[in-house]
Image (cartoon, rainbow, N blue to C red):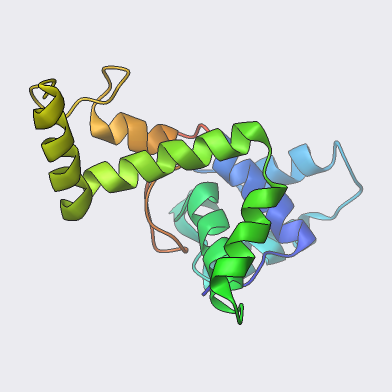
Length: 179
């Protein structure tokens, strides 16, 4: 399970995730300097640490490295939530408390995610097919309610996988990089 990123690690990863392209230490430094005074070597050390921990890949580009995210922010967030939930002595009560803290918009996102997971699992697919047959509304193909392919709905709902070894689209709007 991943541990929570430190404040500076998170600031660096936020930029790597948002930019969704290979970045240099200098680019991250210049953007961070708009918010705080920070040395090049500090950013370089943080990015090297992130590489050692498996959060970014790096490739040599001239005399510098270019860093690329290995995972998405959505996968990172999911892994943190899963870790916190798995440590609970009463997982059902923890979920009830968590759901109670959600806004209406967050609950709608949760419902969207549940529909996608149910549709994409064998149990959910067969239950959905049976319901569609009862209603006589079975659609051809597996398009979502909005006419999107399942992958687009899944990507809109937060991607797939968790932890630093995942390469997928996230809910934060980044595009899949095709690495």
